[in-house]
Amino acid sequence: MAGKGILGRKLGMTQVWDDENRVVPVTVIQAGPCRVVQLKTPERDGYSAVQLAFGDVKESRLSGGELGHLAAAEAPPSRHLAELKVDDLEGFEIGQTIAADVFESGELVDISGISKGKGFTGVMARHNFKGQPASHGAHKVHRKPGAVGACATPARIFKGQKMPGRHGNAKTTTLNLEVVEGDAERNLLLIKGSVPGAKGSVVFVRNAAKPRVRSAS
Image (tube, rainbow, N blue to C red; front, side, top):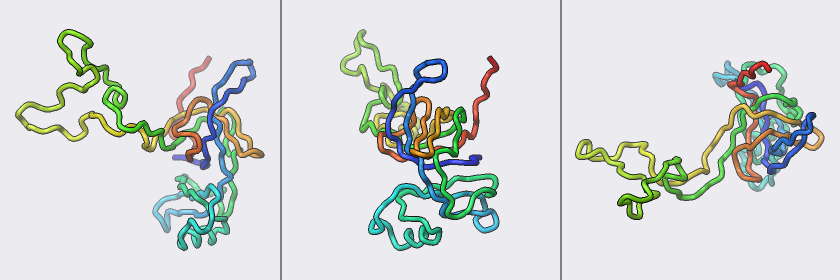
């Protein structure tokens, strides 16, 4: 279970150099600042969690209930809310600000976001099918999926069959990404490698749930 996390906005990718003068590709995330607006307890809610608010927005774009919920925590109008499940609420309080320095260099994190939408695609792009033969009688079916039925019995296509359709634009989580740097003054997180989502999309960064074991070198 996560112990700490932060909401942010993906700004894009760049590269930095490490201590050994090697190029490291990084994703730049505007991480926070986030405000703690609610604490959920096992006695009242059945589990422990921290609700975070991120992103300024006009009051006119929020409902009365949303404004009242944020006002109770003395938080400004915020566009995004997210819940971080924790084992223990110790160290968290209503109104607390969480900044990018919540993560240190070298930590492993899981990042969730909405993946880029690819539109309607075929099975080769969507499911990585290899395609049909390029010759030997294949006629204009090179990128088609082939047979999808199940003969006369049960005479239908099974639910879940891999077919052409909408590709992307779904919640995606990438595990065990390394934090290169956290800059609280500029509210920036540098994450090694790529993260889900397009530029400007909102992502949720939390410490790794299943951190990989690094082999001894």
